[in-house]
Image (cartoon, rainbow, N blue to C red):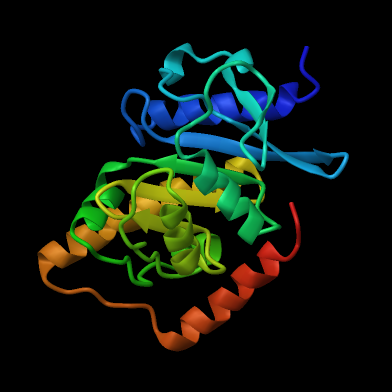
Length: 220
């Protein structure tokens, strides 16, 4: 049995749940969990490439280091592995990354829009507006740079013509971010269709953003 059995199980279950929730189709998207470093070597557990989530087993979850070198498992890791690693390097408090292809978030991304600050829980869980990264090839260094540039201290980002990313201090928190991001995208599209979008007042945003920052600095 793997020494990372519990962390791998969390990654597997999150991947299966995002399929059940309709946040992905087929083998799209990916999930990872930062692992405790060993002998100064940073590690993560991540879903494999091109595997149907309903058929995943714990042994299918790959353990690799931050150079994407294999540590445990013989399947190729997600093609967007370097994006996960880039986020972990940029955000030391983050322990989980989930990439979805959810419908409403993808629609916003296809339209080339950000999601402005329209909901209270969007601030307290995601950190405020959800910005759209510049376009780059999936898995490329340019994609990593573009995502980090707009993610800043928030927990969600949109990928142009692609989908969304949610991050968190736990797998559950990252999954909640993905669900809230999709909810915000849906509400934003509905409000746009009604012809009027009211943003949260600046003073409310300031208070709730301070609460978000306090929670994020508190560890897991």
